[in-house]
Length: 508
Image (tube, rainbow, N blue to C red; front, side, top):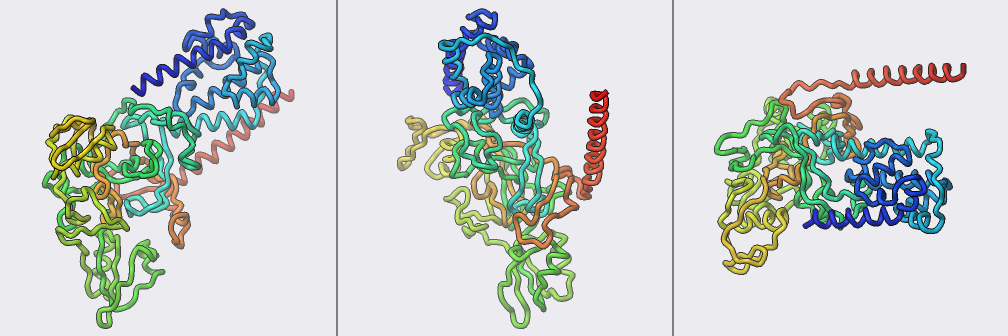
């Protein structure tokens, strides 16, 4: 139905385009009917304004299209002598409808495009278009603001997210301001939505991948591509059974083994003879105040709770002469206790918690689920929120799209996500499995770390994390920052002498 609306809108626009330009096409020596033929009319229009024919692809590319149409209409008017700032502004504000006035009132002669010179505005528009294409269809930058993947991915890590290998997800909201997620995520046309579509990729999601996805439980934005981007580890594939037992994760009954570069963390209670020095904790472990709390005293000893320690940290604390006791904090079974600062879990009707969860079956596309009043809580979000059906539960009766039923066929695959920081991660244990249409891509590179922007850490930048690869099963991370810097210096020196040489030739 959505695609039908888009088809109707497309045909209406072709009629409007033809009605507003046919006389101008005749003035340019073309046939009037050429202004009404979809795609061909734009092909001819690009010839009139002397722009590359391949631009026609950009006119129908989500997010980029509005910018390209503004450029087109300004150039179109200029080709008929309308070259003042007033004419350009009128073309932009009316989104090309100013051409109606030109077509029926002024009927200007075709003059051809003016001689184009490089300007700051032209360069800026080109940069925005190029950046938007890369951001939307290839590589998306994001900065990690929380510690749910510590220390595998650190707070302040600036990531490049590969959107191509899994298959690029076509934007659901194709008409909007580029990069509006960084400025104002409301800057889009909500009524002009597309259905879920994904271009073919060359690899599939695999267990143990680190994945970036749209946060399913975002209560502010309904459009999927406008929701917050989250990054977690994929631990449960469609059809898997997930269970946390005493803080350990099991998939299909087997202990889950993360990749070698994963640094899984847990909560610990540490009893020390002396108070810990915040400076030493940061120097030796990278821990800041907020990563731990002084719980109280036990006789002469001090009792701390550390919210996220790796196995290596645990062994170092254990070996310390000042530490008299260290033990994992595990929430008992059947105790509904969750964090961080969250008092609900998925599903709401189970007494599961972060350390003792499940067993939970991850649905896959094509599964036929038997529904009843005791298990409907597991599938409510999938049926209504993620797959677009109306759901009503009346006692023991279940109605989907107004029809009483006791079964439902799952329409897409789902994935169970978990943070490596097991006790400080808002993940599938809270909001349930992630639908396939929420998947964005996978992070491939930490290009910078801006630690001080998100936490009160002494180090504002962690330089050794600049230009390091992640999610590659290699625990020995190497920074390629020096090589990147050297390459940039070489490029700018080459470009300087190239321009200098060009100017010398022109002056001869």
